[in-house]
Length: 288
Image (tube, rainbow, N blue to C red; front, side, top):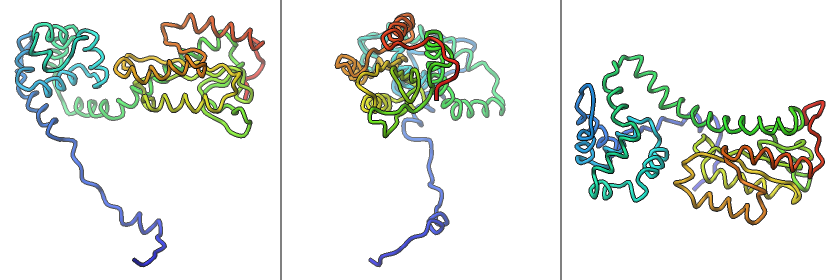
């Protein structure tokens, strides 16, 4: 084969669209299940039983769409009510209990409201916006909401200007940096690092969380306290990954892990760390 020196412009000019479709066998089955749902003013348990008995997998996806829940969110919500199992075997063993769990999630009310809401072309466009950009915004909002929650506590303990936020702190060797949500008192001399990870947020998959935490641990000074704040019930469906973070905490690589319900403990621990590191409560300017 002759050796060539290719040019970017030539490759760009040769690019062509890749044909694709959003439908597969399961999507077709879900559409068939949706078409089987009768249109009427209200629904009862028998409607759910009939739908699930026809094609369980497709019916569960259709029900999840009615509830506007992601697969992870739906799975966790169901397991909270049916810890013994949420699959077709569980449904066949005890249809009454299974359907009751769905009812507790509000399926009947949501389905009635959805079926009896007039649809226009504007409605369709709004739904497309929600499914595309809206899904990403929903995830981003979860992550930023947890950051804002933690910043209120940090500001209350250290003052408005005595920390760096969404920054890159200087590593232990002084020759490299790493991302962290909060560096106290500054990114150049971080005595305390805080990372927030809302699982279920865009860019915060389990692998991202573990990788980001590992990089912070690798870069920070050994005497820098590292606090991790995380939340999201979807962790319950991936407990092995959360267990790895707990193991890191038990090894002393993470000082402590918090959730939103531990806000009081986080505040008290930050006050104690402020005293341990002899840090001021107030500063005249935001650190760089």
